[in-house]
Image 1 (cartoon, each protein chain N blue to C red):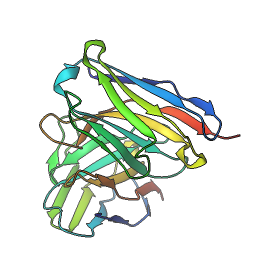
Image 2 (image 1 turned 120 degrees about the vertical axis):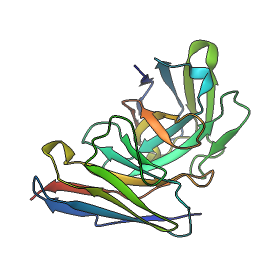
Image 3 (image 1 turned 60 degrees about the vertical axis):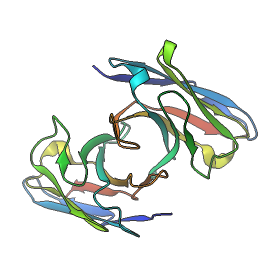
Image 4 (image 1 turned 90 degrees about the vertical axis):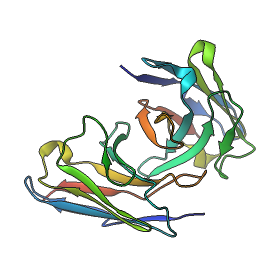
Length: 120
Length: 107
């Protein structure tokens, strides 16, 4: 069974940093491209970052470019999101999501999400 | 950037109703269109990809159609488990975009 479990969310002050993790199981993690998607409270879904299987290709939404860094460790079956210079508008539930194999940005499995609250 | 719109934003329906949700793209995305279902407090789930292909395990009462800039998600006979929010998403470009969502609630 495919499982994605996020962790690392919490309350952080504006300008602060947080590192999210996503533990993958039930599939060969190194064979799949991965993404982070977020959802502000009561709002819609926003794709924020993509990473290829070997980490050679990385993409970001303009809203987080220069502040967030996606990475992965295939030996640990884990995906990460380092978030710096956090703003109020970064408050959201953050989901990691797997791409359907062979297709970019088609999100066939999602984690349960981790809540990040940016507030003073 | 490609923009996605959905209509209606909210839809009130009864069990057994046929329900149709429309998604429009600001430019052609061919058939690079997915539909997701999300229930309150839960993660989204993929229902349909490539505009009309049903993900394995998704009930056949869900169907999708369209190409280019206009797409539809149809639920042929609404079931109690289907009351949820539905999002379309284009994955034609390296900057994937979701529609604003359609909430299907009980009439």
